[in-house]
Image (cartoon, rainbow, N blue to C red; front, top):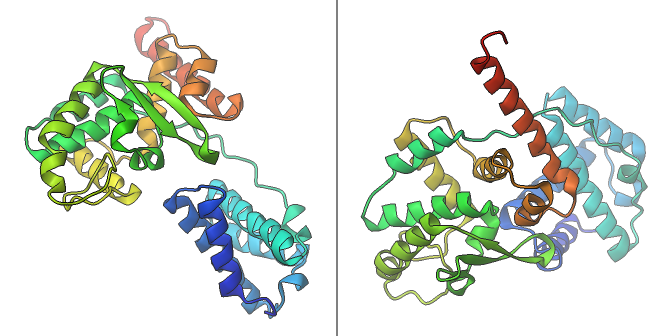
Length: 298
C-alpha cells in the first residue's frame, strides 16, 4: 500500500492511548481488528487504502459472519476499523466512505450475567485469608463489588485515590471523565488491611504509587486482575467469571434493592441512560423467576 501500514497503525495506536485514553486491553483489540482487515485487503489485492470501497468492507464483514463470530465481536471490529479510517482521513486525507456506510449487526438480546447474593457471599468466604496475597485479592474483590468500577479504572488507581476515612474513591473513567464513588465499611476494612499489612511488604524497594500491585511489587495489569479473579472463583467452586460480571452484579443488586436508574448511571460512569437500562431487564427477569418459584399457582 502507498501509505505505510505499520506507520499508520503505530500512529493510530498512539492516538488511542494518548488522546482517547483507552485501556491497554481496548487498544490491543483495536490493533488486532485493524491488522486483521489489512490482512484481508492483501488477499483481495488491494494495495492502497484509497482503493477500499464499500464492496470490500461488506465482503470482509460477510467473512466474519461465515466464521460464526458473535454479533458483538463483529460490531466491535466494524467500530475499530471505522475509527481507524476516520483517523486516517484526518491525518492523511484517506477517504473513509467504505465503513461509514456499513451498518452494525443488530445486537443479540443477551442479558448481562451476574452473581446472586448467596453466590457472592460464597465467593467472599472461600477467599478469606490473612496472608499478603489473600489480603490483596480480597481488597480487589471488595472494591470492585462496592463501586462497580471497570478493571481498567481499578488498575489505574493511585494510593491517594481511595479515602478510607470518607469511604470515597476517585476514578478516572472513559474520556478522562472523573467521578467519585462511595464504598462501604467492608471495602474500607479490606483496603486498610491490604494497605497496612500487605502492599508495603510486597513493594519492598519499588517506588511507584499504583494502589494495586502484583507479587513482584509492580503495578497490577488488567490481565493480572482477570487471573486473580479466575483463581478466586476456582476456590469458591463457582462458574467461570469475567471481571465485568462483578460490575453487572453491582448494578443489578443496587436496582434490586431500590436504587434509582440515574444514580446507578452516575456510579457506573455511563454517558447515556440507555447503557444502564439493560439492567432493568435483568431485574425484571429476576422478579419473574422469583415469582415462578415462589407462587403456588405460577
